[in-house]
Length: 106
Image 1: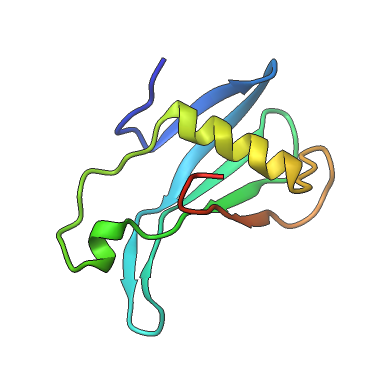
Image 2: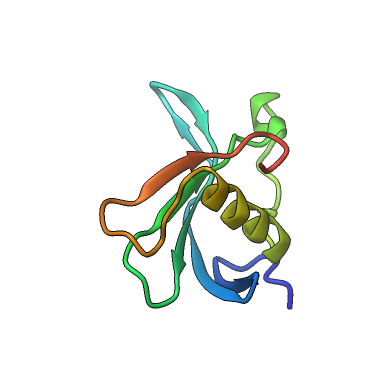
């Protein structure tokens, strides 16, 4: 099931379900320039969230118009796996952990 063009969804990664939602679309900041989208992740029935910060799309950096948002289940699954590898512990308590995703989506 693909969630292309959706702002929320659920993905299954290695038998565990994770809910996600688009937290922020790419936007312009007078202080920092273009900021990429952010996606919030939460393993179902747990407390600690993760936030994935994506780089701004290259087209925005080149001064072109914003294109259609490209967010699908495969991208979210890669983000979940990367956050888990980087130390996200969904069963622990605390503030959401923030992870910066590189241009390749890792």
